Image 1 (tube, one colour):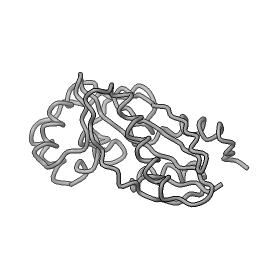
Image 2 (cartoon, helix red, strand yellow):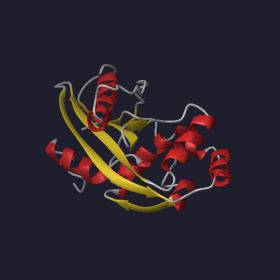
Image 3 (cartoon, helix red, strand yellow):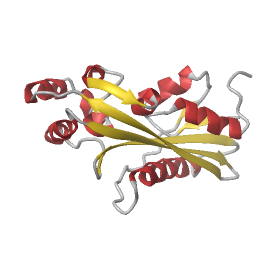
Length: 192
C-alpha cells in the first residue's frame, strides 16, 4: 500500500526511513494552532488528525497517511515553535533547569475508507540549567527556530538534556514504537 507522510519534517522522514518504510512526503500545509480548550494530549492528536485529513483530500486511490504533531508542555502552558528569537529565548529560559513534557500525537488514516487510528506518546525531559549567554549562543545557531519548545534533542540541543523518561524518538518528533503498533493494525508489515 502507498504510504504518505503528511509532514515536511526532515526528522520525521529520517525516522520513517529508519523503520524501513517506503513512503512519499506530502506536507499538509495545516497551520499548527493551539486550541486552549483541549488538553495537551488531545491537542497533539487533534493537530495530527487535521494534517492527515488535509492530505487525504488531495490523494487519489488507496493510501495510508501518517500525521504527527509534537507539543512541549511546561506546567499548564503548551509551547509550540517560537515565532522569533525573543520567543525562543523566553521558552528556553522557562525550560532550563526544570522538567517538562513532550507529547506527540499520531494519526494514521486509510483512504479512501477514511478509517483513522490515533494515539499519543508522552516523555518527561529534564533540561540542564543554562545561562542567558548559553541560550543566546544556541539561538544564534538557528536550530531552535522550527522546533516545539525551541530545542532539538537530536542536534546541538541534545547537550542540554540531562535525562529523559520515556521514548527518545517521541522527543525527536515521531514515536516509532507507537507508530509501528498502529501500522500493524492496518496490516503493514515492516519486515515483509
